[in-house]
Image (cartoon, rainbow, N blue to C red; front, top):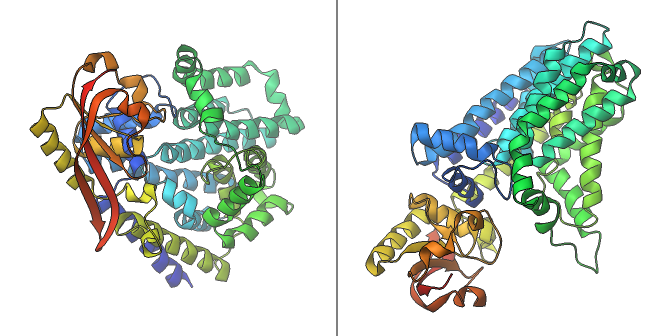
Length: 478
């Protein structure tokens, strides 16, 4: 049994390393890299922490995939350290508990995917794991009627603040901890001490860049997260969002983790963690119920509920045993990892049935596309290069090593905060688009004339993945 599990762990690690070494980057990773080349106190789509770390990495290691991916590699190692610290706090057998929890972390699809990509989520996971550890450490002392470890509470709130600087949904862990604190007589007593409010003050201090950004931009980031990115549900089927949310939870946690999760949430706790497990439960239920409610009005992406899964996974480790369920879970995670890696590094899976979905297609052929863009830009002496969506503008800019590549598409993105139209009036532009976007009437109105120059067919494994068109747009009108 142990050899089977170790073998599967080895396969998971190999898949992770192979994907990183494949040279594949996802469109959103390139987007955040472009953020990092325009340092700012915060950004439109998300808070700034990910961009800040990528900026530092670019200064240390240059403009390359290694600099992009080294940050999530470091945070992944730190994630395991945080899990080890939590195991020592909540388990009577920390070594065994850590092995099981680390196995769950490696094999659970949502942690596997979100911890290896240069997206804000890998920082969210790291910060919330350490925040959870320090919260557990603080409340463990309170429940044992020991002297309050206020430093642990300060560190918990600082890490929660850093998590919020990665993604807004980090605050749901804090909301769960607050609910846990006021629900218990012993823990409720902390609100009689000034240190509790000082800890909250530290949280506000850490997130102050994001507060300032939203004040200065009329709550643009908060408005985007709470309103602009949601298209609503079909009027004839208001349960689509709910089904998608619950289905995503099963798929990205794995069907074989649902039973241990239910045991963790419902069975009366015992042992060293019998009181602390309620903290994990409170955070899980607060976050999950928030997104459960939102799923009745909009589609919920599978990773938005990460705070819930981070809060509960160390306690699931207390109920997961090395048996057929563990093997099935690891096998499932290995299969999902292999399919994801194949989809983005070898060939989009949908090409076997129809055509590639646009997000998968955007992971392919950018070195070739960038070479064509450089050739055409030089040949026609254009003033600037642009795409028609951030998922094409960003990888093009990354592979061209050019932070000035912009996005002129109709969808609002961070590019609108960087691009200064008045600086390019009267200039010609090279515009990249695809069949998924095309040249909109609004874009045509911004130039005197737009002419097709070249179509680039992106192929992989002998199949066409995407067709990209380059246009010459003359006399930019702003």
